[in-house]
Image (cartoon, rainbow, N blue to C red; front, side):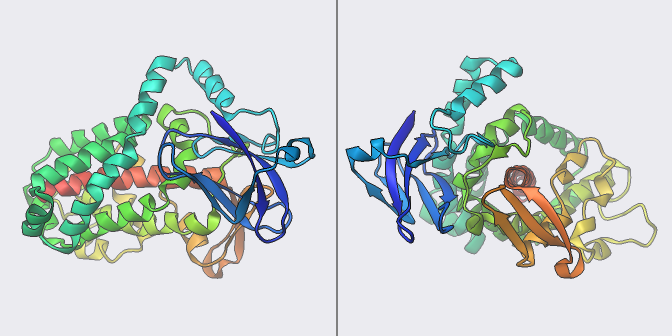
Length: 375
């Protein structure tokens, strides 16, 4: 469903005819910058049939505006817009979805079923958020008294939630990771994991870092679940000021999590969990290495290598050194990479979102393994 309404920018009074494609998930939010003054304008809905969110502009209710030649702005919280159609008054983003379904020969009925499953993701998070916060800051006794859950019950709840996120292309990767996990004696890794109190805190931080802005990462979700091509010709309606540092925050946490697949790989290759290929290289030395190299140990393991596919030090550095800027006209982000940010690298907003989603999925997979190890 496409909703049409009129707005006026709070800062410059520029008026627009909005065409908002209603999504399936709540809360949902889409954003653009005013074409005249660059004011960030956001709109969406917190709940089904709830009042419209509108930040940075005010609604105008005037039938005569239909006769004015106002600029049209197409927004959709869950489907990217193809470049050139951002202001097309007859464009519907859902038509691009049907094209992708036809091209990939996907079953429309199964696709609708997947949409229903995905629509439960945010609701499941509401059930996970409180016990995760409590177990990360308190203890299992408090988890039981406040949430009436023991640790095993919480882990089951967490897994039900995260498996919704990785359904599709990443699901196969997760089962490959589980194959390696289930093929080894985990005794030593369990002992290590249970000594790492910070892991639960980091799982909490990982989830909250992404989930506080999750509605801004929706546009590539089904492209990634179905393996549809994501090109720079796609536009995402996001607020860069909100999500610009999310990737780097995820990167830092997952760099610490990589010790788990590293240990798994050591055992897979016939060594002790803390024994590496290089003589004299110890676990304590590994934990002191630059995070850019944390995935080196398992990069040749076909069941684990995927974990580093979206793990890019240049993207972390470019977005975390206060040296990244989004061009609202080209939908590109300029990053200052290398030492001192002296080398400029450009990445499309849609590519950034894709990397954030993939990296978050990796973090969820490893965090699920960590929770199992801590039982």
